[in-house]
Length: 129
Image (cartoon, rainbow, N blue to C red; front, side, top):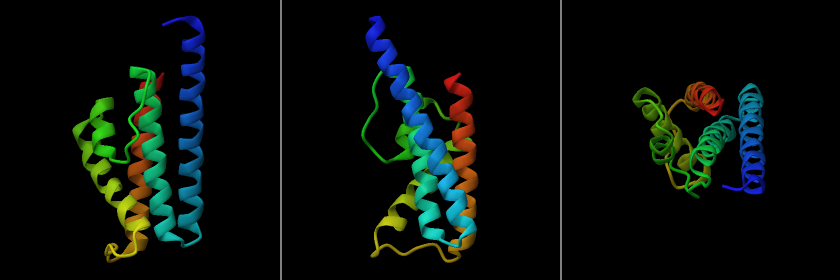
């Protein structure tokens, strides 16, 4: 890889990571504001962008998908976190589509999703170093 491509890729990784951190902060803010579906969505987005930053660093490209399990497998996410990624992927679906039944206790679900996103972003950050 030539130096110019490397510099651009490194900048792109930084942009994906910055968006992941912003989305995680937004998820926290929305949870505190009792906007549970929206918090769930931003939790999923934070994990997705963190994993995409890592995949971009590892492979020089990202897959344009929202399935956190697939992205997690690409990034070698540990099995325990793949389970959390699976649940977060579901958060994306029922926070976006009105015809999908949401969690029974959305407040608790949103809090759990935020914890999962925090764990995945923390793991991603560690592996970006």
